[in-house]
Length: 193
Image (cartoon, rainbow, N blue to C red; front, side, top):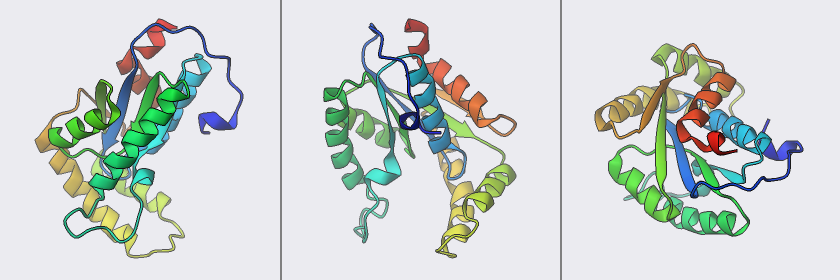
């Protein structure tokens, strides 16, 4: 359940410098679910934050031929949204999305104007395919499911080769709650309550 759907304690005074966390990985690995649950953990601890799904910041049609994944739009929107969340009191930003290489990571960090830690989620490809099947049940766009199946392996290989994440977590045998707890631990944010 997203952190905005339930009451949480009032924010506590909090010393660490503002920073951001990108939860990345291939399609269907559980990035968005993990980010939402990390947000819940931060809210339960009274730590001011915001959770952002990067796909939502660049979902527009049509995409330019030279930018099929709408990276320019994503970065422009992320700059504005990060400023707004910081002005509203967020100390930390939790991002769910894909950065395929160190250059994309650096572009996200520049847009945020914050230090950025990257945690890559992985899972066995058959596990990712099962998760994608569940996600796409009743999909209004039947062509998107095969595309996501193909993309899962391609993107996983690209992320293996790029090797820019600060932390990597195999989620194959973990519950979403265990994934979130482990990812949150990598930030050190919960140790400063």
